[in-house]
Amino acid sequence: MSPAGREGASMPPPTSQRTRARIAVRLLPALLSGLASGLAACQGDAGSQGAEAAQRDAGALAAEGTPAPRRPTRSYHLRRTDTGCEVFWIDGDLVSASQDIVCPPDLEVGERLRLTGKTCLRESTHTPSRAVPVVCPLPLTAMEKADRTPPDAGAPPDGGKRR
Image (cartoon, rainbow, N blue to C red; front, side, top):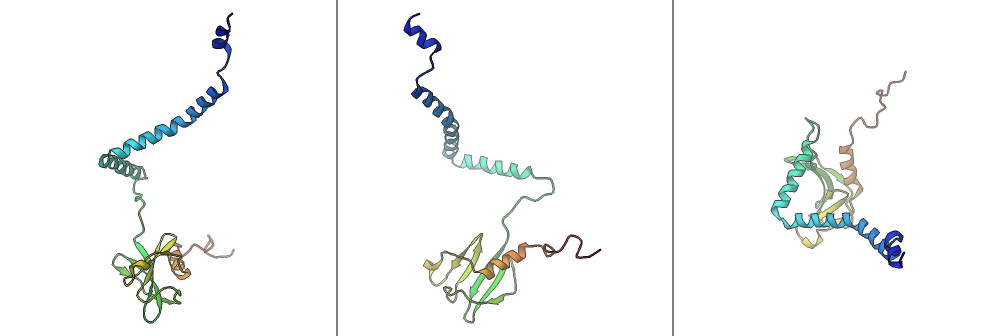
């Protein structure tokens, strides 16, 4: 048998070719995914309409009678007035009674902090450059946490009755 015949029949490809083949097999799904998302981005509004329809369909998959998840309507605020600071919540047209608290040292009169997820946003009408994300004061996060916790969350399952 000639040397050329032996190479083609039973010899594996050189190491560099095998490595390239492995890399290509591993990268192919990522490349195809990137290509698909690139095509979706090129479609512009048509692509976003398809994404919106997919989101609506995902909401339809929830059990009947179960409302789709939504962003909470209630927002929590800490406001500094001439006389001190207060925390309160706003839910549509409803505003809670305010609770007086100790003011954070960097909050100026007329400014307020609004709880946004796990941080707070300082809102300033007098100095727009001061409207930046800041660390939330404990009384503001505690108010939101107390509203999220059901009233009987700490109660024993049998209602506290001993047998």
